[in-house]
Length: 148
Image (cartoon, rainbow, N blue to C red; front, side, top):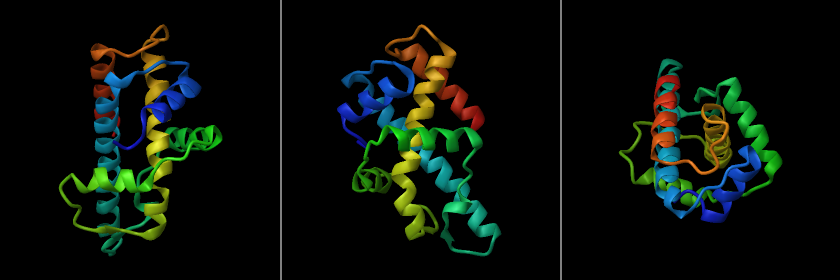
């Protein structure tokens, strides 16, 4: 898991006024892990194009919306465990390239930004949603698949 239940609940509550529960933990953790991996794979392509064999922070395609979500995550002042994030990523197939120290230190902010953006998208898709169910999760996952 990339974060504890209390952290996840706080991020969703502050970012979008939503309630999430333990049943959402695995789905959220998988979603975040997959989206972070998508960003790192795209960063790997950029590093390769630039003749490097290490992924730098500037290689990761951070959209304006994700950058805003990262800023909002910083304002929430929640600390995520880098060790937990790295542990989750190590369970996935290895990247061809390593990541720089700077990028490694920014992974928690990326995860926080992904989480904040996810909560906000739930609210945009269904403003009345208080606790996302399977249908809402599937809808939001499809949106992210299109965008990232």
